[in-house]
Each structure stands twice: as structure tokens, then as C-alpha cells.
Length: 219
Ligand code: SAH
Image (cartoon, rainbow, N blue to C red):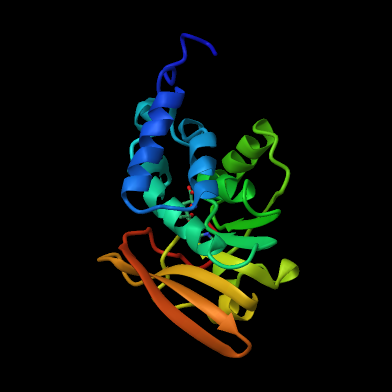
């Protein structure tokens, strides 16, 4: 490690252990999820100027008016993905910094992630290469339409909030699959888990959250 790098210290195991301990206190129980959060170097997903805050349990700006989600929310959504069975494929809507995708990539064999913003996607793709992560496939597109080419998915995780659940995402869920999605306006959203059973969809409440809006179209 280059001692001149401003991230030094922030990357230390102790700093990451503190974050994991905090998530555990907040109710995250799945050991595989906690381990993934411990292992993924979150400081690489934020601006160097913010690296010192990367292991705080807080959302941070990633440019273009977007944010990297709070680790607790990433952990909560990932736990929901893994809650039943062992999902083989997951679709993420809103790649952003790539952090959530990388956490998922350690727990699910195939990760697909779509992003509408070309520059953000370019940056996260570069990071996946640098980290030698090869099980994340990405696409520049409006995620309201999902990614039909690789459907059905055992789980879909949406990291930007629509006003209503997009029909296409429900259709791209495998039987027994789970959609984890924040729904609502900027004032605050409900994080829901929607499980598909044949043609029936069962909804449950997970948390109150605050995501950036899901914006239609490409940038
Ligand atoms: N999962 C990200 C969080 C990103 S913030 C992370 O771990 O960093 C939400 C992201 O959703 C932003 O990058 C935003 O550009 C993207 N987004 C918003 N609307 C979208 C849409 N319709 N389709 C795809 N991505 C979208």
C-alpha cells in the first residue's frame, strides 16, 4: 500500500470491522453478507476526497447528483436477495458507483446491472476490471424496462426509486423470485420485497428509505 495515498488507514481492517460491528448491531444477521461488506473496499467507489468517510454507515455523493447507498441499506437489500434459496442470477437497476453490484457479485454467481448514465457506467466498468471481477455484466439502458435478454432473474434489486413498481420488472422475475424495490417520491420511500408465486405477487414492507429517483430514459 502506498503510504502517500489519502485512503491509508481508512482501508484498515479495523475500520472495516467497526462498520461490520455496527451493521450487526443494527440487525444485519447474514454472515455471508457481513463478510462481503467487510471485504469490498468501499473507499474505491467514492471520490478520493471522501475516502476517509467510506466506512461510515452513510450515503455519499458519487457525482452527477447520484449517491452510493448507505452500507446498512446495501446489506439489508442483499439480505433480502439471499433470504430464500440460493439465487443464481440477480439484476440490479442503477449501477451507480458499482458498489452494490460488487457486494452481490461475491454472493450470487451471475450479476446483471443496468445504468442510464453513461459516465457513471464507464467508471464502474473500469473499477470491475481493476478489481478483476468478471461475473458482473452491465448495460447502458433505462432499467424501468429491466434487461429482458437475461431474464428471468431469481432476484431484482432496484437502487433508484420509481413512483410505482414497473410492470417489466415483475415480468422478469423467476417463479419464487424476489424484487427488492424502493417505491415513492423524494419525500421518502417504502422499501418493499415482492415475491413472485406463479402469477401472484406477495408484497412485504422492509424499511423506510431515501433513494434518488428512477429517471426514465438514458442520459
Ligand atoms: N447501486 C448504486 C446506487 C446508485 S444511485 C451504488 O451501489 O452505488 C442510483 C443510480 O440509479 C444512479 O446511478 C442513477 O443514474 C441510476 N438510475 C436512475 N434512473 C435509472 C434508470 N431508469 N435506469 C437505470 N439506472 C437508473
